[in-house]
Structure formats: structure tokens, C-alpha cells
Image (tube, rainbow, N blue to C red; front, side, top):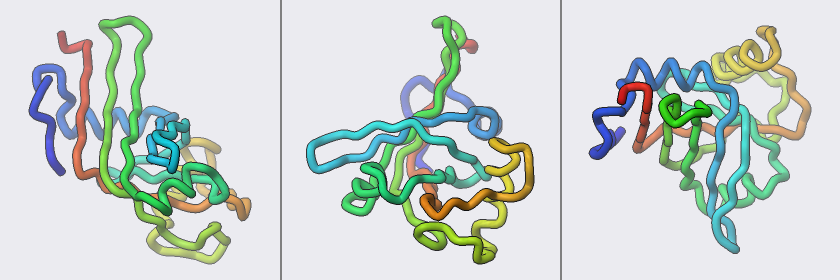
Length: 150
């Protein structure tokens, strides 16, 4: 993964970035549609190497990604200037597993589904509704900032 070249003084190190991505709940996913950029909020999990997105299959986001898998994903937090922190991840999305996801066991999805179920539902069992599927982003580039370091 390419590291950032600017703003290194306020950049998060790998451990800080990973802890931040595990703790936050909502990301913003930027895709490119036929008529320009499309930005949507989405729940996610970070497994230490990849960002996993649980996406509705019949959505503009999914259509955009079928056409062009390149994305930028932003996770940020803070209200006051001195509290602002965040991570932007860029790369190419890949579909993983059934589309839409079924209850068929998939060893590749076992860990992200466990992480997701715990994070959002407080259980180890993933709720599958027949409308969602998994997208995985292994970042090619990460940019981060933590204004609390100023």
C-alpha cells in the first residue's frame, strides 16, 4: 500500500489507523457513475488488511462498481477542529461470495461476517436478507490525519 507523502506530522501510524477503522461505524463510499461522482454512507468492518462493505446489490453504488471498481472511502470523526481525524482509503473493490449473499457457508466470509455481526448487532451470527452482498477493498493508498497531534 502506498503511504501518504504530505501531512506526515499528523498522519496516523498503522496501529492508530487500524484501531480507528475498527472503532468507527460509518464510512462514505465514493464511486463514479455515468453522470459523475456518487457518494453514499455505509457500514463497514476492517479486518486489519481489508475494508469489508455490506452493500445492497440493487443500488446505484453497486451499478457504479460493476462499471468501474475504483473507489475512495472516507472514515472520519471529530466535531471541533482540534479533534478532527480520519482515514481515506483508495483502491479497487472486488465482490466476494454469493450475490446476493445466501446462508451458504463461505470460509472467506466467516471472519468479516463475525466482525460485522458483533460490531452492529452484538451477536456472532450474521443476518442475511437476500438483498446484500460483500465488497472488499484492499487499499492501494491510505491517507490519514489526526489533528489532535498538532
